[in-house]
Length: 331
Image 1 (tube, rainbow, N blue to C red):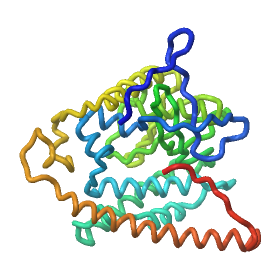
Image 2: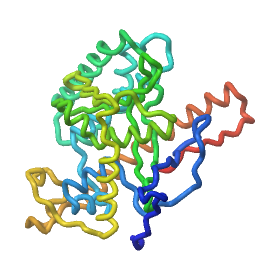
Image 3: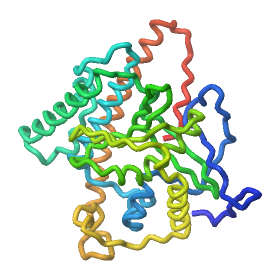
């Protein structure tokens, strides 16, 4: 890790205003910042992980040790993918619920359910369909296509630190403004105070300001399992406090402070066997790596097949001589 860089400040001694390093083509009217390569890249999940356990952060994001797939993660990823497909439809009428069902089927990953029998897997799958059906019932009556789904961003917050992420759903409000929605597949909804204090939504507020030149009117966590969307107005979001938290974590990461922080969550930690706070033989790192490798290769084969289909579709409409140059941004 590189040595500490001096932190640029404004004339008033305040930290610099965050600027955007876009992952794709900038929107009309938005400036293109010069390219940069920050020493530290963080995200909401990385900051949250460090605050819970610095050693877990090291195992997961620096050592890049593989983790075990879980039913909850696989299930949540499939639901997110289905919601993205449905809300991204640019149609005057709401897409039918079958669009959600088809997307769920197409994006279902079996890796997290490998230890279950077939009937138990089907229970999870049917539950996902029920959740999506309720979501369709709630929002199809007043459907507005999303301004963007899974909108990638990277923010330069100074001192060679960047914050990146992907916004689940950018909504168009009735007044023509923006609303930010993050989908959650937790079983329980959180309180309005928790939503107002969300670091994730504060980061998304900053990103919206840089991406679209305006802050959102409101932000929300949409708990799709119980079917509850908790909305808070923009003035309740503490952006300055969020930046302080991110910079504090960045400083500790730069100083390589990775102590263990035992908690009740340790019982579910993939790396408990490596942790000095516990005794054990260590996790099956090669075995987990092979499981993840198999899953990624299967996903790559599916993605490559879809790429070929789309290339043929574009060529059929635009001609074989057309050359596609697509800037997909960094991974």
